Image (cartoon, rainbow, N blue to C red; front, top):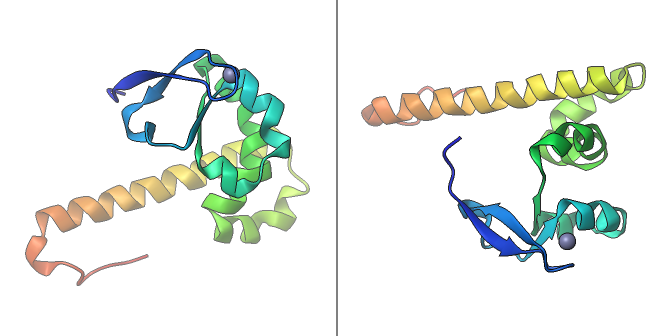
Length: 130
Ligand SMILES: [Zn+2]
């Protein structure tokens, strides 16, 4: 995607890492190596304020871990509650696939909603479904 990236310094080791422009105001920046070292000690609230530069090739490796342990419960609490018991019998790969789809669906719904509002400015808020 065309998001602009700016180089920032990792708050923990000082290494230069790329940061998307919209995350530049994060309280801290962490390179992937540092984040993996500190992530278990972090408070979820703290994780919110850190931008982590995840190299593309590491994204897949890191995803199951982070998705299941943290992001899922936070980003999709309803989805998580619905599926919690089901997840116990699923492999990590299946969970990632399913949660990825759920995330994509939410984003698509939002986008559709947004586009509708933009084209139908006059009937704003009339046909909201969520
Ligand atoms: Zn670092």
